[in-house]
Length: 282
Ligand code: NAP
Image (tube, rainbow, N blue to C red; front, side, top):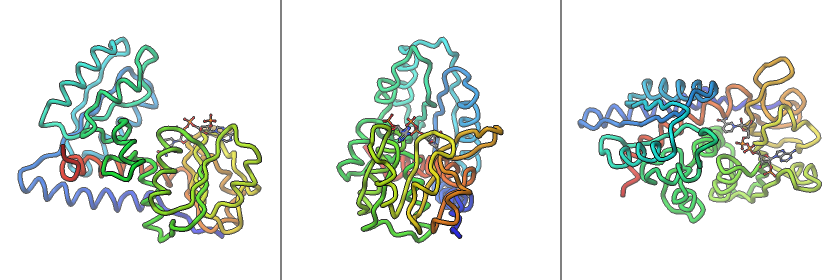
């Protein structure tokens, strides 16, 4: 029987800690502001943006909305980012992805000041993570490290296998586990004999985007399984990349979906906004 890692509880702890520090800053006359930029009205993005604004409200961070129409040009978006970069009242800038197809996402992300890049996607922050320097850390992998630490799961010396190599989850996850002294292997869609590798994992992080892909044949007895996936199953119910019921009796700890990694992403975004106003300085 596995220990269920409660992302809802841990994310609330982190938001409450952030809320307290935000209140302390407010008492000193400093308000934290996050600019939230959304282009178009992708339904999933609308939900994410709404949840991020709700979290801002909860912790006491001011969210400043910029809702732009789908037909906004890249130049217009870059112009807005430039204004926000130079606006001292704005601490963090979040551009909700995906952007419409006529925009170059990398160009837009790299236009955000690295000192306001609370998503941790800017090349300078990615480089800082890779070289062990201070910078913003991408929220989902950062949240997973917090889940492990706050559940007293040691990373140092453990074989950590990450399935998936995306820029927002797999790659930064691997760098963070390495930073925590894990021995890290990354597998992806071109990996041969994947199960042989995943079955060696003490900690298995799954970020592929395929419903219930990982079953008990992929995991070692007693492994810790972190399921990043957010998918819909055949009954349109939210499910992860891991077949929870099949692996549950084999593993020592597991994150549920929903209620595992998902809530951590927003909690770490709030943490990054606080860092933007305190730790990360030009
Ligand atoms: P992504 O950009 O589509 O990347 C998926 C990765 O999985 C790729 O590296 C791909 O390999 C690999 N992959 C696909 N099929 C595979 C297979 N059969 N065997 C091995 N590897 C395979 O996805 P993502 O953005 O990382 O997201 C992954 C999942 O996490 C999605 O369900 C997403 O919704 C979820 N997510 C959740 C949160 C959260 O807050 N909880 C945040 C972000 C993402 P190649 O590189 O070789 O193509």
